[in-house]
Length: 133
View 1: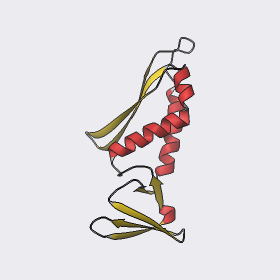
View 2: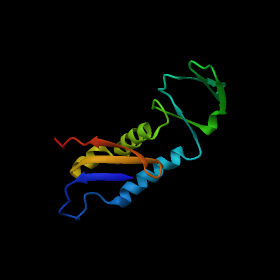
View 3: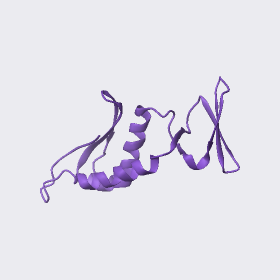
View 4: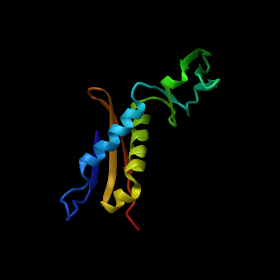
């Protein structure tokens, strides 16, 4: 779920064209699709790359070792692969892809992304867009 808050532009009667938003969301989804999401910032997992072929994860304190082919993994700057962390990640990536300047020019004040785990279980994160100076 993506939600924007702002004023309707008098030139085209949009806050922003959702077709534009969909392009970026699809791009983000394609980068994550079919990958094992590795939370790089986790304090309970130690990550090691072996010969640029395998990714090993050691759980702390249990010392369980897991190994995955590196091409199946996507390391993300998150603490855990939860809907809460993923909603923050998606929102921040969407702001970067659209560009802060574009959002400001469209007079968008908030961009919210919701990630659903199962029906009725969703986390949302809202990015406050500073006004154009």
